[in-house]
Length: 598
Ligand code: ASP
Image (cartoon, rainbow, N blue to C red; front, side, top):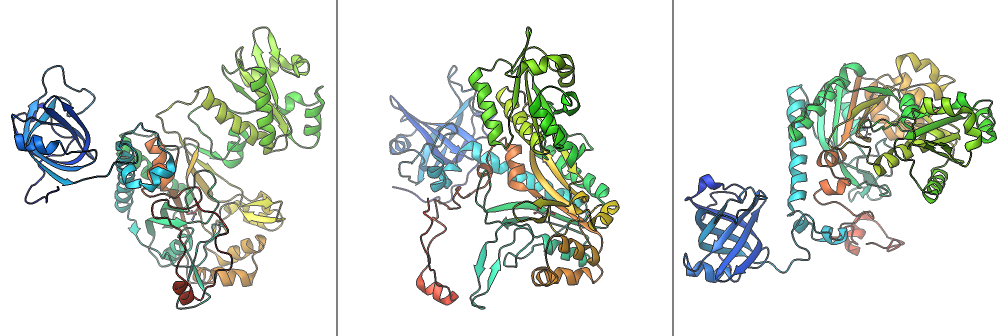
């Protein structure tokens, strides 16, 4: 039997009471986290989002409340009234904020009952993710998950406060729109009023934010949902949230410090940590050479070392061929990792090949000398090798000779993997850096054409504009990524605001005048009506919050995420629709049910 709330008012939360409250009459509301029957006394841990309070039902205090408490089961919704008392000495619970006190219940209302749960509401219970997502509202009752949303909320709060303070205006842009230029597959929405035509859900507000600059808004931001219909490899979601920003009249070196301070404000708000400024900057080429990636984790060293000159002209034929073909030899020393078994070493070679390298040389540095399948080629250069790599006995050295960037990226992966395996990455810190000077274009071998490394509206560096005629592969862009602990959290660029250059970039990308007109004609028009210099950035909010919350997966910081197959086990979206709905849209499904859902 349940009761109405009536005129009961909650006086305190379940995380609030302390021994100083002893003697007060309080009313708490929440969920029955646990119930224990102890010879006449019934203990109920009452939980709300702030914590737990122990409530004691004693027949001597109230026979009625005690009687009713016997019906309480896990997750019943309760209102408890009673007096705060110190717990008998020796029964305090130091793990709970409220652990010194209990509420001696005199009245109880059961506001609602609950079926037996599919899983207990505990942080350390492992439950299959599908079940968690199917009952996400129960999953979200877990304190650690709730904490993630507090971090998310504080992040957004700090962003809004900072940007408003700096003259930014929050503006919404449409969801029902046309294709945007991020280059992923669009989600399409059929139009009922124009049968056969479709809206595309925006992959980002890129074109609109540039138009807002043409409109003279100067400083725009939006915390906005974006949609990309990609295969959900790794840790992606089909809909995700960006902190999207655009400004006018700022060059890169004005913009980056402004953004830096926003990120510092967020970390300060969330964790009370002051991150030093300015954030270091690394050119893309340097990041690749030293860390084998354009998102280096700078919480630890383990830099790659170029060994090409050391091996040039030597006896090791495999490397000679690589060098003769214009390739490089790169090495990495992992401190204290030299104790690996032959099998583990062979596994590294297999992994290197699966990462695209032709091979991998491993070397164990021992007090007696070098241990390696190719030790005899290395002995003559041992001194120089160890010095260049700053390697010492007990270390493991990995060497790859290959074309750039393969040699670097393969070692870059080992750098991170081995640092993780050997616990060389300090936790709790924030290593932020800008990666700048990205190439404008990358050559797509499959499609035999240039592709924009960022997006087609990214401006070349002033000194590189002339390279667009003839040597586009060498032109660097006014693009930048913000990297936090080895993950890209934001990326943006100064935009092209002159039609002529925009046209040239489209040509290089193989976008014909007609295609450009058809796709982005409105933007091209706008660029002819007095477009100011502009630039901006977009942050992946989910990723940023996941890092701040110490979570590996962004699904832990999205309230209702999708599975790897893009489905939602709770609502069962996506779902078939009625023939009537399809008819109204002028759509016939020819091959339904092709892909199994899960
Ligand atoms: N629209 C870009 C993106 O989503 C970011 C930017 O250039 O501002 O990656």
